[in-house]
Length: 342
Image (cartoon, rainbow, N blue to C red; front, side, top):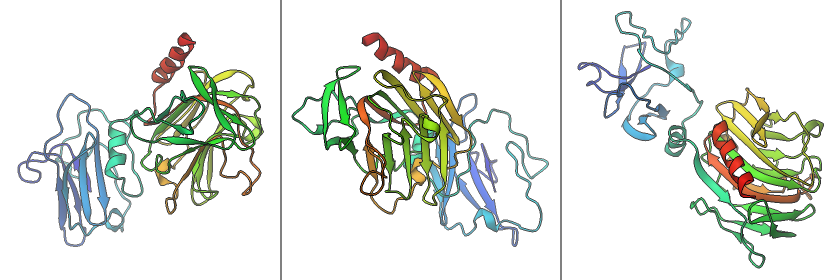
């Protein structure tokens, strides 16, 4: 099977083309894009096979598809070692690719059109809580415009924050309940927020998005060895961790962020990298989705009565969730902007 930037007038109508071919009878099945790939500019391309339908995406938009494809990659000729290339063809007379390839990914499973669009158009603001409301209301408006409003639960209130107001959580019952589904289409992502911890109890959560104790992703002020940490746990129970190299301070404002891009997870503390891991093969959308997600700020999936994890005791301000991983300049600019406005 191959993907070419441009088929010829016989095999591809001079447009981008995906082909998968059967070894037994040389039957082949093509999916055509509606154009050739343009030269001298970056283009995001994706090919998705789901059941017997193949779809080509250019810059996050479906560009062509075909149905009735009875082959899957595992059904290709199995009697010799595969020859797998980027930029080269199985056919000696075909030209090599003249260009640049970056961020090449293969997923086991078919991404949705929303997930493809996220990869092609990263760093879209998914959810944004300024927490600038006043006491008397329990509803926090999502300032991203996506309608992901959240609610204050337990002993929580609005107080003076790093920028206007913040939400104050008491460490015993207070938390913020976010809507289910905000994680559903996240592949790469960024969470960035200001945190003022009155205490840094072990496994107290900055956020915890998940499906009970079966699968979840968390950002905790005190994980293993009492260090700031991000963890993501898939539905098989496998845990992947990014631990910071420092403990979380108390009684001061700190800007923290976590990003996932491909299999690379990174934790930031006041704009500086303090931890990373390069072997995280699971994204938020791949967490178990057989039930409605339970998404919290300040509360754990393992909080009583399920377990013994403590509630977060402190303040949270300017909480942002992005589709896509912000780069270091983008994160640092937001951190600096808040500092200048204090």
